[in-house]
Length: 397
Ligand SMILES: *Cc1c(COP(=O)(O)O)cnc(C)c1O
Image 1: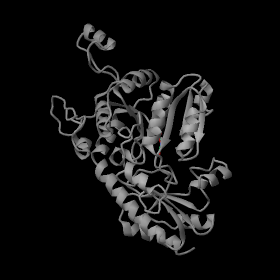
Image 2: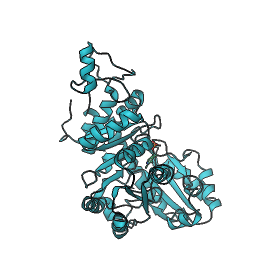
Image 3: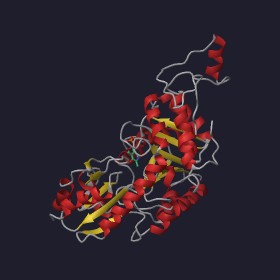
């Protein structure tokens, strides 16, 4: 129902994928059931072979999960989506279902920490997959890495990056991948389809940690793989139905309802973050602000060409020391000191000593993650309260 992809995203977020039972409930139904009953042995047999459609077992078929997958696929402009238990389950499932021994993965170094572990020695490396890490937005660096080994199967990045908000040219890297025969994957967690549509720019697959903006209120874990019907419903589906990192129906239901307010939330997050970035950029005790939609951002033009909003995440360098950065964090009363993001509640982090503490000091320095860098994932509280919350610490340094 209502899967007409010509509809506006605001409409798709609310209507796409909706299905009703014979009770005609208005809000989407939650199906907390492990299995589904068949009317006869013959029907059971036909459903198991796929000869007849129908739900079987919630590890691989559940109507609530289906509705979430269809709504997200419609928003990304994709043929299909497969929901997973977490964002990391989506990344692991995709890598394991597409890659085989001897294959090569190229990944940006500026990705979620656990993602590098999945692609590297702790997981994919154990199965004979080699990974090259690119620590640059330079197109030459990507071209070189993709050509470095003959069997480049998967190319992966996040844009904008965390925590320094670097922007990668999706269309240009997509073209390189197409020529190399590699599958190009964009983790669209920061922008969501409301602000950025990687598939329309040439990417093959979009990954989501639904635990972030898709839920938007920090309640449930979830993830998704979004792409062509063939990749999702054959390759990934067959792997996931066997290995089982599936999304729980309750979590799917929360996420389905979360998608309904995604457009309005993403626009509000972007507006709040842009205003706070502007204010921070003019503050005498701050040397630099990283935010894609600030005119001072080195890739502002690229960001504005591939995103319709800057997103929630910004970071800034304090003029001073690590102690000064910590003082700003410790003096906040509204912002939550936590590494999470994608919540209506604003969060504040010191990346060098938390989310990125396992990197070497030299690698952190090269990536711009210095001891004076603070990251804020701007929520939906009032602008004046957020400014006052940061001003309290800034006034003391
Ligand atoms: C949080 C996050 C993930 C991992 O998602 P989980 O749901 O926590 O497993 C992956 N990518 C990005 C960009 C993230 O922020």
